[in-house]
Length: 107
Image (cartoon, rainbow, N blue to C red):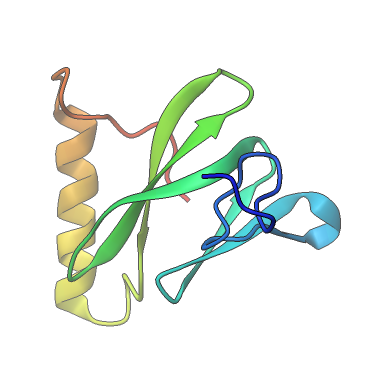
């Protein structure tokens, strides 16, 4: 994807904006702001979205592995959404399968 707007392999649709003195990088993915620590390198690539959130793939520069980051908008605004979010976290912590990524960090 060679484009004059592309910087260092970054997708022009999801520009990176440094925030908090460069400690965090902010991306606008389909109208949702992803603010991730600077240890994650661009490009950030959306890999799925649904009714409750968006999942993106990004490279962890400390471990050199691809990780998936899920942002659940308004996860705790109402009781039922909070229960669903908690249930998903609990399930992911117990699953051990090559096709299911586990939980590394919950923020």
